[in-house]
Every structure is written in C-alpha cells, then in structure tokens.
Image (cartoon, rainbow, N blue to C red; front, side):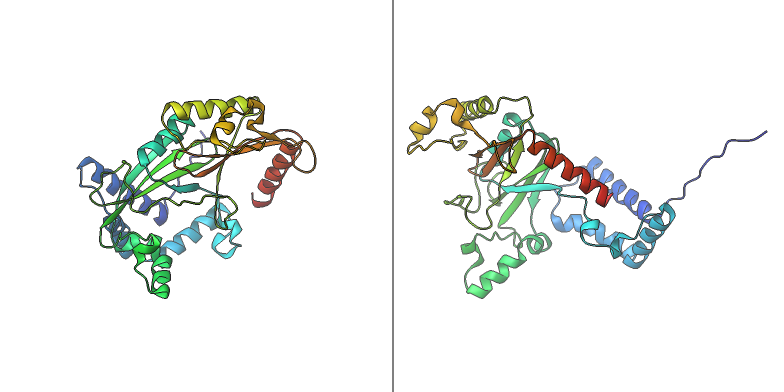
Length: 304
C-alpha cells in the first residue's frame, strides 16, 4: 500500500522569531499594559536581537532564499528590494476632523491607530536632520517647528486609513497636556500651500470610470460644508476672483478634461482637504488609461 507523500516543513529561525514577537504582543494586549512609548516597543526588538545576533538572522534569511529558489535580494538593486509605496503620510491640525474626512467623506477604512509616542529613539528617528539644521542656524529647534519628543513635552499620534490601493497615514504632533485626537497641535499650519513650492506634495484620488466627475466634486463640497469642513474647496477651470464666484461657477467647470496629446482621456481638478492639504482627483479614461495599464503590466513583468 502506497501512503500519500506528506511534505513536512521545517521552520526557519526568522519565522520562529516572528512568532515569538507576536506572542509577546498578544500577551501585552491581554494584560492591559499601560500605553507604550516607543522606547518600550523597541525593548522587545532589542531583547530578540540580543538572543539571536543579526548574523544568524541573515544566515536564516539566506537559507530561506536558497530553499525556495529565490535570489538573495540583499545583493540586488535597490529597486528590486522594494514592494512599492506603502503609504502617504499627512501631518494634520485636527486629528478627529481629518479622520472624519478621510473615512466618512472619502470612504477610507481605519486600519489601526497608535500614539503618545515620545522618547529619544523616536525623536531621533524622525527629527535628526531638523536638529542638525537648527544647530547649523544656531536657533532653538522649536522655532523651526521641531517638537520635543525626546523630553516628552510633545507627543505624536497616528492613524492609518486604507483605500483600495494605498494607505494614508494621519499624524498629529501635540503638546503633552493636550488630549489625543483633538484640535490642538504643537506647530502652526503652513500659510502658503501653493503646489508650485518645491517640496510640496499632494495626494491624488482616482475616480471610477463610470462616475460623473463634475457631480462628484459638487457632492464632495456639499458634504464637507455640511460637516463644517470649510477648507474643502475645489478649483474651477474658469477664472474666478472671489470665493463667491468660485462657488457660483457652472458645474461643468468642476473638472478639466484633456482631449489631445499624451494625456488624452485624463480628467482632473485640484482641491484642498479638510486640513488645507493639497489633494487631486483624477479620472483616467481611454486612451491614456491604456498607457498606464500597459506601464503597470510591463513593470510587473520586469520586477516579477
């Protein structure tokens, strides 16, 4: 009698370490430990690092690659080591308002939230370059908008919101005596938000093909106004000189449809979000839709 072959899988040290870390995290949640600081979080990773030196980890990873027939990515190009863009981060003035806008208005789904980050490690992780810049200028770092996470005078809270193909991270830096999730922030928002400024970035949302773009913008502004999100304002494709004229412009001016050149089929408009951040809404119809789809397929064929 022939018995069926059963593949027995041996677990690598890398996988055992992951299970160990997850078990510690689960135990911490069950015992309702106090809110974690970044230093406390790092202590678990440090303990694991002491128990299993990095050279062993690298060896285990190499063993995994050899058994599975994968190339050693650590010896490949930088691009081959990436999985793409994981999220876009946006520092907000009012966490509750921003979260409402990105979830209830734009339809994102909360992934997780964390916060009260403070301490030397998280401060250095995020702000080393700004500390150096302050010393070069011989000014107090706070005059450059640098929070004191190291001493705990300020704290950082984050929330992650999932959309179909990207994650948006909302960040709020607040004074330690301010409640999490409120409208108090450590630094004043930027006054000038022109997209022409170098280093300015924007988040672009992709409308479905069958959606009426102009009606979507009208509904977005109406819903935001109903929620008293007064900064949500979309541009118009005609020249207007007052806010009243912008609001009174015909609905067909809510988007710019391109009908020639390489961008033929592209429709877009720029819009401010609930915190005054720069957003864009686009629709990519044929023929430009095929250009992007072809590029994505080619990319997948190249990087695997």
